[in-house]
Image (cartoon, rainbow, N blue to C red; front, top):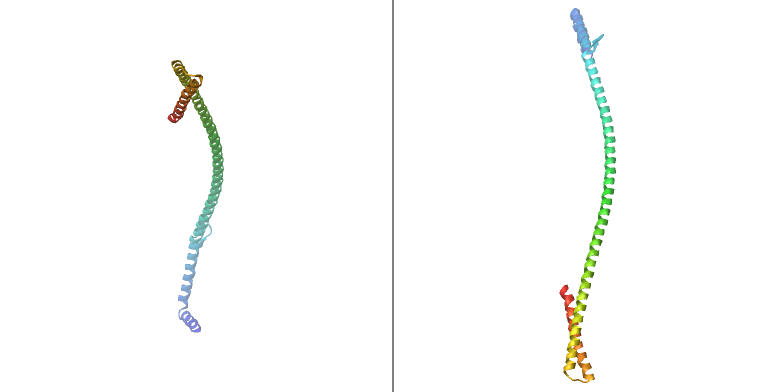
Length: 190
């Protein structure tokens, strides 16, 4: 390092005026750079302007971020309110749907009961009509059987024992025929 220092001192000693001019030029250049970079008095330099602009940009971004946070909080509150309203509405719709389903079920049951009662009434009237027709048919057949038995008794001079056997035979055959036709009638109606 001492060699470098000797060299510098030798240069200064060789031309002290040139050295003074170089130092003056350096100081003028340093002052110009300082005034351009940092400014003088009310005038701001480039570095100061850049720092101020940077501070302003950062402040603007912070304000925007704060505004965005406020909007986010408001949006979350609004979303929570809408979700609560939607849940309330869903519960209301569900209650109404259940009530409507119960009402529909009651109406359908009532209609089915009315229809079943009407079917039972029609079936009962059909059964009564069938019984009435069967009674008429049985009566007509019994009248025919009695008439036939009476004719047979009158035509043949039979003893009371033979008359009783003849009547029992005719009545038994007619009862068997009636039972067979009664068994065939329900099978045909199915």
